[in-house]
Length: 318
Image (cartoon, rainbow, N blue to C red; front, side):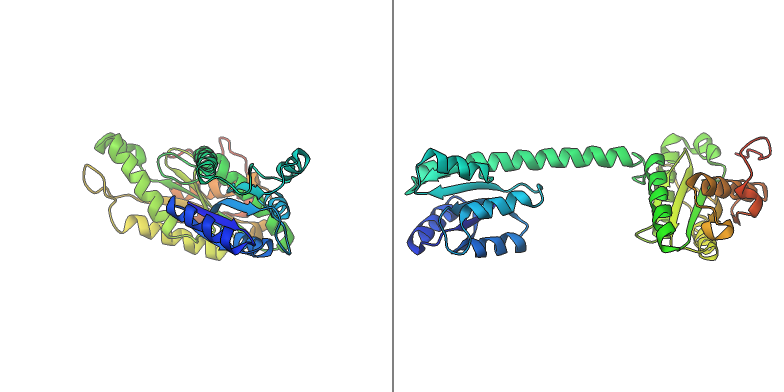
């Protein structure tokens, strides 16, 4: 673990660095608080800090305040070294953000134990952050394909529409549905069906930009949000996706499975539609028209699609 050591006394700093290195820490040693702030700025891997209270330019307490006023993650555990034993001074140091303190000259065994406790705090905090991020990821992503789930991709569409409202750039939406997917499950089994979905998701993702948002919104349905994308470009992307899936069968545990996809594309530039509901509805209507025309193709939304409600007017084709 990387530790920052700041002390203006050369002999004390050399001795402390020798101890810390011997205990297995990677030590960044500096001679004053100003250099400590620079080290913290330039090295995001620092997790522990041993700071002398009294230093030129910037003292240890000010360094503590700077650390605590910045981002809270990753957490930096701060131990103050001070010759002051007045309780009021010590409280001031802890109020400034220090986690612990030692009275100088410090005992090496006591310092080692205090740092070991600090290291446990840092490691526990990192475990909690990792667990939180894992839960956040799982809440936003589809467990099978790793793509965004329905809620997350629709939230992203809302954000892109708000951004487009400020910039004036178009946003395209693309709905895709694997053709005859029920037959894949019935013929090859559900394990093969899952493999098809994972590989299809991977191929679709390879056809869009890194900042496009791709999600699985149903069993074999996908939604892609294409910011700063015209209708024509969206249609070209849809054709590229169709070719990526149809040209080579998808690998499954039960052998290769040929798969095609039908797609519908709608864009804000077509009718000025600026709601997520309207765009998705129009793209969905275009998708169903592609299905009705024989599948394995892409279709552009028409002006009627932006006002057409899902009802008996749309033929549900599996």
